[in-house]
Length: 190
Image (cartoon, rainbow, N blue to C red; front, side):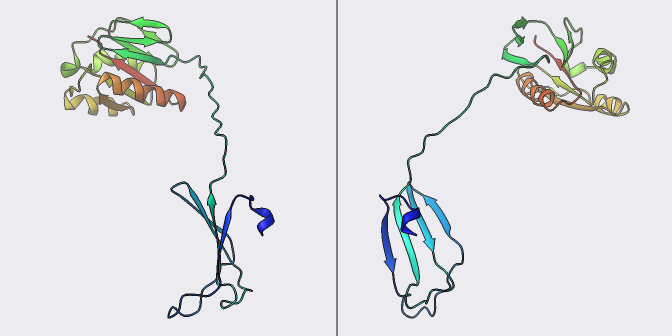
C-alpha cells in the first residue's frame, strides 16, 4: 500500500483499538477525508485482525495540483442583455435608452406604455404577438407592482407573467434565453 501513496506522506500505525471500546469495526474500502489542508486516509480490511492492525492512518500534506479553469466566450445569436445602468441597457453592443420589448430574436424599440403601476394588457400586445411562454416585466430601478388584474388577463392566454425590477428582469431573461425558453422581456428604463 505504501507504494501507491506519494513518498512525502507520513504514516501513523495504530495497532490496537482503544481499551474499553470493544472490538473495532473495520472498513472494507478506503475513505478519504479532506480538511484544513491535510489529507487523512483510513484504510483497513475485514481480513485484518483487530488486535494486530485495528486501523492504519496515513497523514500527510495534500498533493500539489494545478487548478485548470477553461474560460470560453459565450457566442450566441440571441439578443442578450450584456449590461444595465439606470436608464439604459446594452443589447449586444448597442445601448438602448428607451423602454423596449425584447425576445431572443427581436428588439422592439420605443415601447409605449403608461408605466408599470398602470400597465394594461393592450400595452403588452407587442409582447404577446411574439408567442412567449413567459413575459418578464422590468419595472425600472425598483420594483413597482402593476394592477393584480393584469396577471389574470395574461394567464387567460396561457402565458406566465413575472414582475421584477429591471436589473433582475435582465438577469432572469438571459438565463431563460440560455435555457432556450420562449421568453419576452418588457423593460421600463425611464
